[in-house]
Length: 82
Image (cartoon, rainbow, N blue to C red):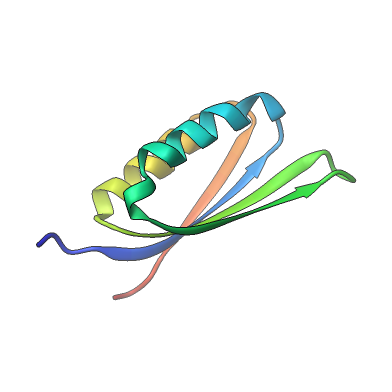
């Protein structure tokens, strides 16, 4: 069995056009997603999404990279030490 790590990907969406691509990527990696929470923030015209994952480092890194490459999207990933 492949070793997995728990991670949280924090996503700030500044362009609403990116939402469909974000959801498609999250769906693609759904087997590693523990849960997600999305919070719209109309005052700043952004959305904030947190995604908790438990998966192989390669999968978490791949998803992070793909999300970070989207226009209007900023991400940061934090990994557990275990």
